[in-house]
Image (cartoon, rainbow, N blue to C red; front, side):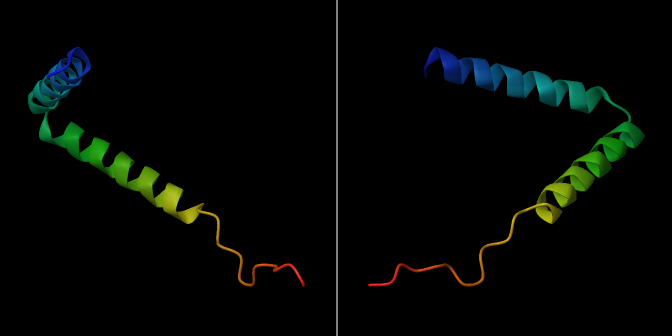
Length: 57
């Protein structure tokens, strides 16, 4: 395992420990914020062009 992978794994484990120590209400609040942020991202996604312009020959 590379040094970078070890660092990422260590950060992930530490984050899980921090989340496990939080009260349930705080976890739910964080989850609600994450869901709201995801909805904002999906709502602001640009639409694809309906009829792309094609070069004439």
